[in-house]
Length: 192
Image 1 (spheres, one colour):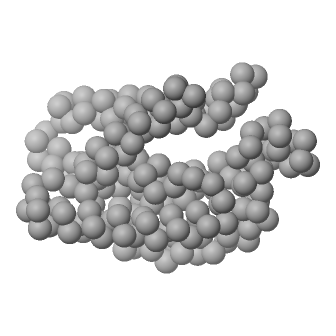
Image 2 (cartoon, one colour):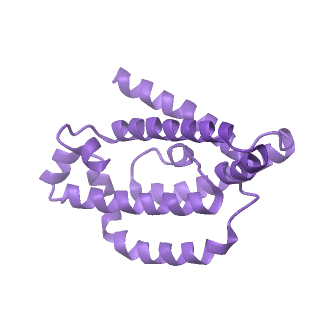
């Protein structure tokens, strides 16, 4: 996927998000099709695994995830300083002395591992990362996005429990708001 998206055409991150969204929709539709075919009792078991739930966190792997995070942080610590330069674009980052392809591959691997861990812990959350991280000065964004994520999840859980009375899940609310925000970003980019 990396070679397809960032190959010869130098498409950029918005193209990567769009490809990811299309693939996510495809796999979601494939999952829905499989759900129609299987037994209704098995469907309920499968549905509890496919929808993100902060009430059913997989506590068996929390220690493993913490160990993986502690191993990843030293691996990417030097690259975090380069994120502001890389945000300028590939050509500008290369002109400023950054090995763009190496750093991009390393960061994409880390993002894939972190996404896999969060999915294994609570389930798929498609747009949470897009909602909380959008800006510049990565030195501040990383810490701020962690706090915004925690606050978003807490506020979302309060909405699900108090306002919606558990008639919907937090994952649905996050995907709805994130989808609207993604469309806003696409429309804003097309106007530029």
